[in-house]
Amino acid sequence: MLGLMQDWPLTVDKILDHAARWHGEVEIVSRSVEGPIVRTTYAQAHERARRLSGALAGLGVKPGDRIATLAWNTARHLEAWYAIMGMGAVCHTLNPRLFADQLCYIINHAEDKIIFTDLTFVPTLIEHRAKMPTVKHFVVMTDEAHMAAAAGLEGAVCFETLVAGGSPDVAWGGFDENTACGLCYTSGTTGNPKGVLYSHRSNFLHTLVTLASDVMGFSARDTILPVVPMFHANAWGIAFSAPAVGAKLVMPGAKLDGASVYELLESERVTFSAAVPTVWQMLLSELRDKQAKLSTLKRVVIGGSAVPEAIVRGFRDEFGVDVTHAWGMTEMSPLGTLSAPNQATLGLDPEGQVRLKLKQGRAPLGVDMEIEDDADHPLPHDGKTFGRLKVKGPFIAREYFKGEGGRILDDHGFFDTGDVATIDEAGFMQITDRAKDVIKSGGEWISSIEIENLAVGHPKAAIAAVIGAAHPKWDERPVLLVKLKEGETASKEEFLSFLEGKIAKWWMPDDVVFVDDIPLGATGKIDKKLIRDRMKAYVLPTAQPAKESA
Ligand code: ADP
Image 1 (cartoon, rainbow, N blue to C red):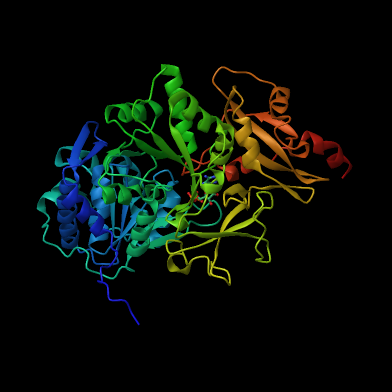
Image 2 (cartoon, protein in one colour; image 1 turned 180 degrees about the vertical axis):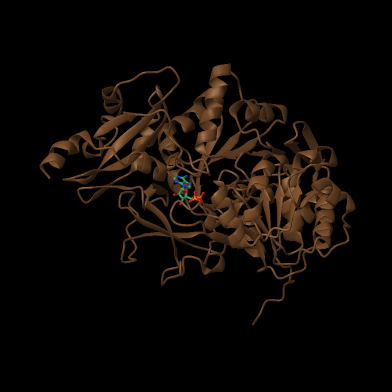
């Protein structure tokens, strides 16, 4: 027997409809790429997105076509998303931090018809135009007054001209909720990038889940500044969840340095923000240098890589801001777990709360997770045993775009995240490492993440990374790479004694190497692949005698 409730397909156009109807005057404030701060409202964004949909139809865009965006977080980018998705086309976010060759690969693989671009990226597009044969138009996200900068880009049209000329009387929504809605490629730390194809239903459900108070917990009274870019795993859903509740949105545009973010946090009275740890590290040092205060910010969600303890303590003790640690991935839309306390952890003292926040957290409704051994057997939830972390749920990928990479679910329908983790008795998951970064020493595993997050707490360290280096007896041993803060000098012994007592003896790095640069990848994470490439010729001091005799 079927239920007798209304059929109301879960499509994301309804999110902007809702925001415009019930929160129409709420502002979207953007630091525009051209410079000035621009203020619009949800009602205007709705009207403009619909006009843009009409204009796209005029350019020949059909439902299912892939339309890309290469853009910073601004109101125009938000309007482009809804214009594309609202007409049933697929919004493909491109990460401008990728190398041009990777970008061209992705554009061709997706067969993008149109690319929305900020002025910032026009020179790159001009240079590589010939390598994007499927692209018919570039919508330059600016007004006519600034179009001269795009003069050399064949197929360029002006965003504001399209909006002004488009009819708002367009087909908007009204399709099956399983229709494809967004496309985002994983950054391809292994192999070629692979496309995750979200549906309207999966994005809508992810939005509802993220609104729970133990997840992002937004309300209509919040002012939200997503530093996390819309091109990185959908800005963790904020472009949907903020309008869904009618929160004020503050879009930081191209300026993501500590000073610029701080200026907006204060001037727009931001209450909530989200970014990767490296961004918060920059902000905290900016605040300390200026002896500045955060007068309205209450909560930050930090994810994308593990949150160092120094960030949790810095925000709490110096600025009175609560940190929620989050874990997720492009394949999960992206939120997977968050570190909000539950009944079992209510009574923790302040130290215990910090330790809890260093864990990646619990699964909300809609995410099922398990840790398993290589034979797919579940492992105990004792906070110690680690295994492959697998997930299942209605906003988790079941296959990559065009079947790339073949079958990705196991026999029980679980997706292997590629992460290695523990789960404790209270249900809190903690990432030990990415499966490919874990250091295998004498048949046991050492967590590179744990050592680097302790090392970065050393007062002289700017950033730290740990990789495994070949060892004739132990297979691999950890090496700590440290980039020191400007003007600092330090010895290897200083760092080793800093770590002593904080980690098991056999986890102690065999060497400390001071470097000028620790490279970050396109999503702001330490690029271990590049570090390993750079360290190819490196030989562990502890490995040398054995190597000579080999
Ligand atoms: P990629 O960088 O591979 O494109 P994502 O940006 O989707 O992919 O990142 C997903 C991966 O990032 C996770 O599988 C995990 O390894 C890592 N990650 C995300 N959040 C955290 C976190 N809070 N702690 C540790 N690792 C994390």
